[in-house]
Image (tube, rainbow, N blue to C red; front, side, top):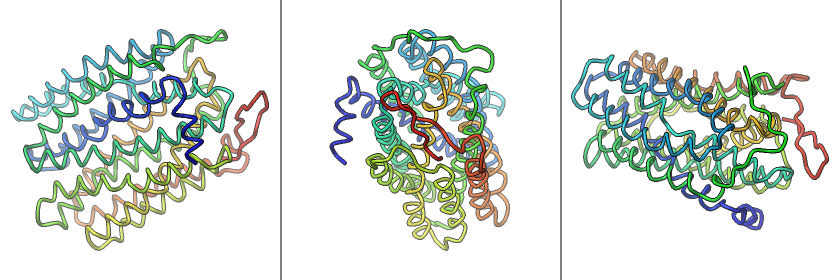
Length: 410
């Protein structure tokens, strides 16, 4: 297993992508939760706070494909530098609006600006992995598994950092920390060897119109991304709401801790999965496992049991995401990879925003936390059905290896 990951580590520029690329995205695991807590503290309700988080996520989702297409044309590095410099400034504006309890439209406007300027780190990094492992599907799977597993640190360390900031200071400090981390990390990744070595392929054809959305199978893959995104957003609100309802002492910190431990099982399973000798796995069955793990959360009687269920259930997440991300490179032409990955992020973020908004309303009602977990599981189950449809668009996908096509059931 270590030999396979060592071969990935030795790829030019890989250490920066694996280490700094993860640290640079800690803000993903910090901004939504810290903004939720900051505004809930200001307004006293989750509905308004969840709305602001949703607007932030939707703005990111809308802007991402445009930024992704630009990165496919001029390269990811300059796009990362520009957004990496602007995003922290917009977060500072959002902090000011939240702390001073400005009118909700002002807060939402600041959230839109912050969301639109978030650097497209995930799309750029995953697109770069695909370019670096062209023609080597098993190496690509291992690289993306490492990326996915390490990316779980974002969802483990991010909420925990928020919990520490809230316990010692206040949610605004967590937002400020996210701004600094994003700024420094993005600039380092943009100047790294892997990003600077970007070159147009000889067969590069700029995307036009709908771009990768017209590629057969990609729209179906986005349906599976929507289900996962909705579930992640819904659970991100349901867990803190569970802590508020069932934990007496410092429920905000407990909620952040519970979200953090969710990624522990995912990270461990992702590392194991990436070292498997075969190229692919059935995405539909992996998604089914995620759905079951979320439904189980509705039956947990206390915070300790919920934490254990989150750790165990999290083991289903990274393998599903690894296969999903690998399929992008197998389905979409190389000239559209950045945009394709931004579409994956866009749909995931938009779905997460929908999950946050709907769940923010649901958890304010009696018994709402239980329904929130059931909704999350149902959303993933819908994606599983699409992936498992016999003869459907995701029934078989071809990976290329040394000039041969290898059909992999998904």
